[in-house]
Image (cartoon, rainbow, N blue to C red):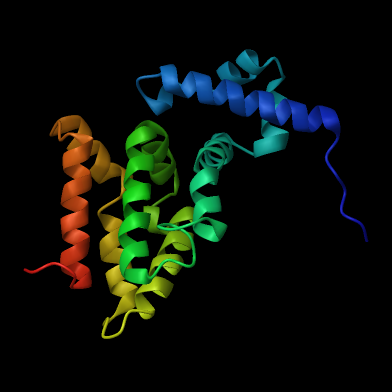
Length: 195
């Protein structure tokens, strides 16, 4: 059975919706201010088109998040060092965590909205499972690394959207300081920095 390709107008509508959602999301103070009706109007499509393409608001947020995250995913899957697969784990883990932190700093409201939309726990989100598996696999390649499952959770916790929002928003920690602190924490966990 051949896979059905989406119609050209469906692809065009999806791109218009994502562009409209992206623009609206960047102008809103709170993610809750973004409505499906507002996005549909900005994209020039009906609400039914949005629901058909994305299911619900969370599906739309997930698609927007994935679109913004795509360059990092491509770098991790097939890119050059320091994110690419040929990089030794002791250099790749810190680079990946730094990339995730920078992404969440640049996309604070979207990342927070998506983590909150995951239901009872952000650890159940599809993105989280993907990053955890990747970091755990890298940690298992490091000789002497104990409990790679827990360590991957602990390292990723330092890039959670609610923590990033707290530090960048309430505490007014500068992005470069956060990156330096994360690098130091990661080095201590990996044993590449003296305690």
